[in-house]
Image (cartoon, rainbow, N blue to C red; front, side):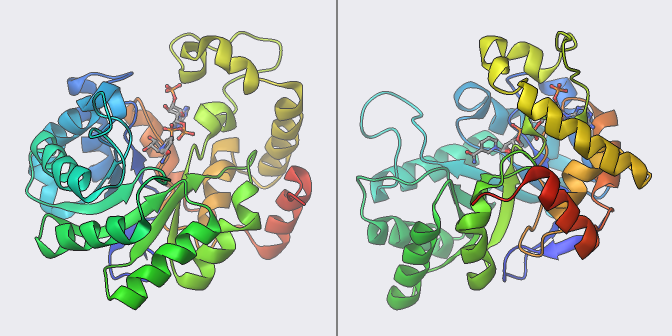
Length: 315
Ligand SMILES: NC(=O)c1ccc[n+]([C@@H]2O[C@H](COP(=O)([O-])OP(=O)(O)OC[C@H]3O[C@@H](n4cnc5c(N)ncnc54)[C@H](OP(=O)(O)O)[C@@H]3O)[C@@H](O)[C@H]2O)c1
């Protein structure tokens, strides 16, 4: 397994990480443990969850139980900001909420520190100065070691970094945004900002909910028990003719080079210098073996250009 600096920090994360939003939602505590143990065995050290995953707290609880014996050897990332209860004091980026949220996550995770604490999405009603100062305080208290953002646009990252610099506060080291072969929108803005400021990108939905593994076929119902089968009506937005057309061209490209579609989905992301860890989700230990291996394909500049042509850069 390759390890990379998370942004320009000294925190070394595995190029292939593990997204944990299936825990407590699609898989139980025993299966979570099996998946986590396999990940650790393969050298995956970066685990990404959120307070809200698994139905407000379950993912953190299951992950916390599963990592007990591995705690010293893993990078534990979670998030705050999404509503964890009713009313205005149960979410957001205020000082009051952050102090409550970090303690609640620590309790569920069964640990006394979080390695990477990420703001799940921007909060339009709280001044960024207040959020950055509160995050700096939870870092200084030892409860959090590094901070990151998620679903920010480029200017929001620049603004936060400027506030951190001018107020001498802890800066963000990572940005988590949707990014995969079918959705390259962040290349227009956030990706460039991340590269310039040394903020490590953690692409989410790297497999487009599993579509980019190639296990869904045109004209066929999604295989039983899969994520997209469980999405019901929402699956229609993923299983489109256009997406299958791009998928077929990508599969040909990968096969001609002796690789699978999954290798391409993960390897292409990991081939970007500004991507720190590809946090694909998994429901079975066997999937992790394939995912860890997929991160080993380093595409050449010519191959990257060809994939760019197939998927077409956003204008
Ligand atoms: N910051 C945010 O706003 C945000 C939003 C969404 C997600 N995330 C993070 O990003 C992580 C990744 O996203 P995601 O898990 O939602 O989607 P994803 O990584 O695009 O897809 C994960 C799904 O792909 C399937 N899969 C994975 N490896 C496979 C393999 N080798 N062979 C066949 N199928 C495979 C599994 O589905 P099956 O169920 O079919 O096995 C798995 O649940 C999340 O876990 C979460 O940590 C963050």
